[in-house]
Image (cartoon, rainbow, N blue to C red; front, side):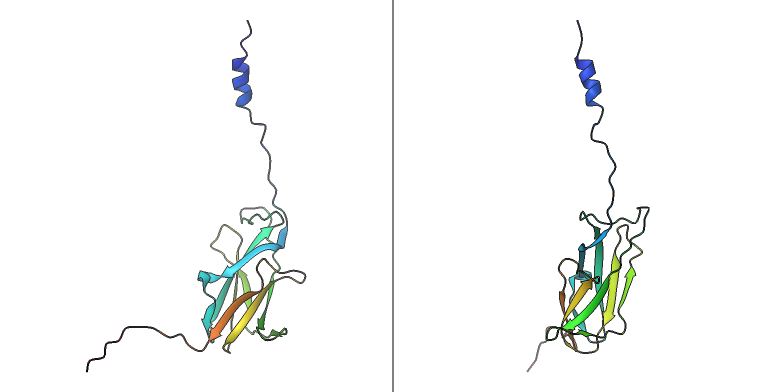
Length: 151
């Protein structure tokens, strides 16, 4: 009599679902962005920090361990909320974040005038998800504390 259960067990131990995953090219429209520490109000002349997380065309994060480097050609512009023309920013910089296993970029800049602004991040053709991003610059931040007045 034929024993079929050993054959069945050996077939179950073989995986038919093995494969290789491929990372697609960087997709600007699938890439994400957000303010460092969720902070979007800054003091005049203070440094604003924005984090860009590139994603591939499938929405996957780009890991530094991949054999190819990230060809992330992001650019950014700043607009006042009352204007459609970008304003010049002398110290805007986009650099790779070195202490991360996921490809991330940090965008930094500072502004000299208080106001309400938009940050547009993308490339020549499209913006990243959620762009433009709202932020403000103020002349000073009030420090709240309790005060007791003795009469």
